Length: 611
Image (cartoon, rainbow, N blue to C red; front, side, top):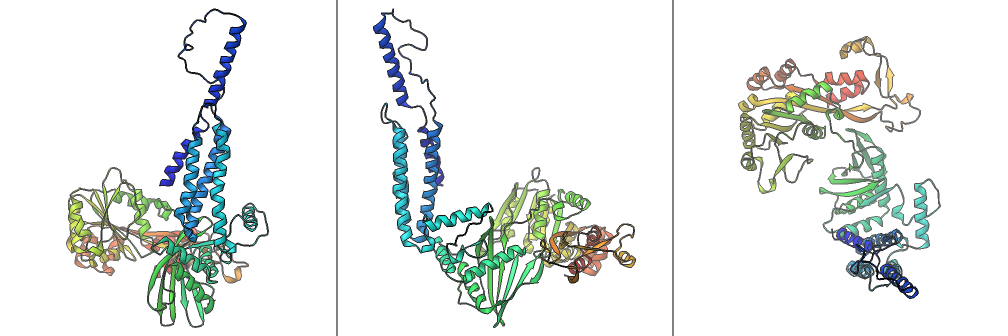
């Protein structure tokens, strides 16, 4: 913050350099006086009459431009160079331990004081802008150059800056951005390999993070770790599992919800890679049995990633899971983005707009449940109703406008029930409680429904009827729940066929009949290519056959028949037919629509339904 204040303050001072100049005033007054004296010597003219705005009390006015854009631009450019240099010195001196306090003062105060002095005229006619043009660059160079010389003596050869090799490398790097190929060696071994920058962020102090990063860079496993992260990005893998055995390291990538085998690695290179990962994550690299968890960060092609790491000893050796969060991700804002049918989205919007009831949004872990909940809240009206969200303080959700968040801390023995009495007195219209963690909170929220309140919650379930039973397992009051539950929206994720390599085929009449698709409606269905049909792996999907995912949805609007079954016979076998009788279209029918459109394949729908 102080740097921003300093930048604005010095900008004003720098601008003064180009404002009205006292020496110009003095020169113009002297010239005017000399001209008047010359005229008086030649002819004795009568006393001039006093003209308005030109009397004895008039202020001298400039007849030449009062703003010098050239001077302003030069001072402003030097100022920007100084600010950028001072910021680099501050960070660099901390990284290599050169006493950042001393160098910050050396870079800041002389230049700032001199800039202030040269920003104002010292006396009439004094060419202070000439002093600024000479003294300011000298002051900048007299502090910056000594730092560069001293720091180059304290760092290895590949970390030296402003040397011929450094300039050659920078020119090669800039040229590569515009398609020019200039031969230049990399600055260091750790800078080789794919364009991925790794960062240590798990230590409490920044100095410890920098120490971990420097230690990791000295290992050959640093390049292996960069290659692993680059492979995850290229394959769109959100998770990689490394299984360490006595002979090798097996890798599996999680892409669009499905595990795919990766290339095996020998144990020696796998061990040095794991040592680097644990060093970056501030974990004990010698511990191979106990469970450890932390994270490191990475950057690639302008995108930032957070990489949580979990390691655990197993019977065969050690298992490591690395997630890849962030980067280029799809943004879901509407029901259409999720793949929801228009009519289904309109019906769900109507339910979300109710003033009273209990709405349950269900799905499997990592199956789109959080995204569906977020989009449902974004799509509903949050201006005319007061929304109150209850969240655990260590597991915050995506923040949205016009939703007030009240937190509780489980580590302190708090729960939604402990904060609900105070929240109820604020009279919100809608409660958003992602989890009914205790029966007491459930009872309080069900009582609020009877007072014309809408409650929105989540539950993990494979299908909409099962979600009702999962809620009962949370020990909610059985009768009150059956009477006040309004609807369940359940989601699953299904992979989209790759548009670049999917193969069309003519379905048989029996297959169309089994799927419930009229024969005159569909001429071809689609599938992934067979191995003999592939000449080269598809560049888009990498030979997987699928690219991205979309959602399929079940909407169960609870009617009296479903309530009766829920009260008298709360079993899945009884709830399913009751749900269909209430108008629920199951996942199978929703998936068949995607098959008919060519969005996905029959085998993919079968996989999702069996999951």
